[in-house]
Length: 186
Image (tube, rainbow, N blue to C red; front, side, top):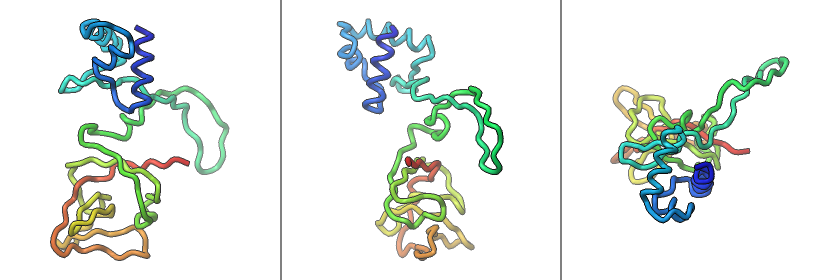
């Protein structure tokens, strides 16, 4: 079972998705799906895997990173390293996996909101939005990321860079998703 677990984790890390039962058969050399089902059930019992509402496999403990504590962003303080927990960025950043997706940012219109070119944003489709939320919007057939604004019943999109002007829709403004997190790699 440990070998199968490692093969599934390796597949997940490489492909960013869980393997199907047929793919697990190929990975492990099992000859039947019932043998795969037996091992998968054992991995579910061990809380390594689970299934979503449609029966698809979901990783439970993959991608978790140790959280060692706090670091002072103000005045320096003595460092104390202690394992306080583990954290999965998926669990921390994503509330609704089925409705979430990632977009890469192009341009600098949101730089003053801390969203720079090359960053990635995690967005949730169908989420409720309100004045001041950063949204992904289709405005008159063009897609953009901006602050959603509603002033006295008049809606518009506001950039976070003084070089750009607010965008008022001429015909249609459709909010597709709400930004939930920004990811930046140095």
